[in-house]
Each structure stands twice: as structure tokens, then as C-alpha cells.
Image 1 (tube, helix red, strand yellow):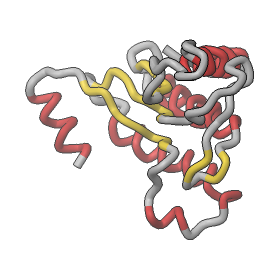
Image 2 (cartoon, helix red, strand yellow):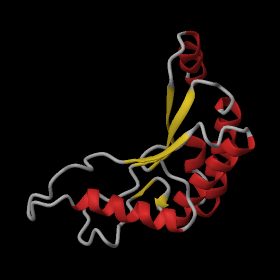
Image 3 (cartoon, helix red, strand yellow):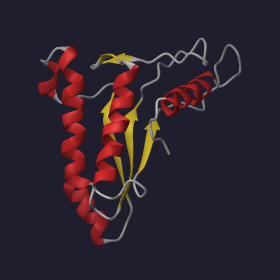
Length: 155
């Protein structure tokens, strides 16, 4: 599992990038039976458990806190549309909460300046075939700005 990979990185003095706490298409099976209204708290407990496990490992340098949060189709990149998935329609405050919890735990462990927090998405550099512009990349830029304006730490 993840612990073995982290230990291997430590043994060979390799930096370790953790991927990911929140992913639109993946969720622990036991969460699927819970109502969407309970999943944010469960998500935060999942982040807390993982950070407790890995935050003090010296070679743990970054994490994709949230993965694939943007909808593939972005009609208006200045108003980013989030995707839906197992989490239900992803409320924007879940994403901010995930980042804030991760950063809070890194700071509490004295590693707030050492662990980088990323938001990750695929096909970010794909050109919209109808318009020839990078709508998803522009949407990510605007979404990141929204998160930063809420006080979320992104690197």
C-alpha cells in the first residue's frame, strides 16, 4: 500500500508525491452507502487519517489534494463548472474544505512550508475543438482564483 511506497521513497531518499485525497470517480466503498450530506465530514476524516499517517515523513513533499474536479465541458471558463461523480454534484465548499484541512494539518505538524498542495485535472491543455481555445485550462485558472480568494492555499 501507500505506506510501503512511502517507506521505499524514504529508504532511497526520493521525494514522494501523494495522489489524491478527493477524486470525483473514486471513493471508498463504505462511503457509497452514506447520504451525500454525510460525505463531506467523512472526506475530512479521510484526509485527517492520511495526513496523520504521512505528514511527518521528510520525503513527503506534495499532494494532489483534489483531482478531476472540473467538468470536461466548460462553456464559460470564467464561471467554472464542477463535475459530478460519486460525491454527488461536488459543492465548491468541499474542495475548499479539503484544501483547508490538509493545509491545517501540515501547519500543525510544522510542515506547512514544506508540503505543496495541488489541484489536479486531466486534459487541461486540450484545445476545445469547436473554438480552438483552452477552455478547461482557463476554467481551472478561474477556479483556482476563486479558491485563493477564499483563503485556500494552493501551490
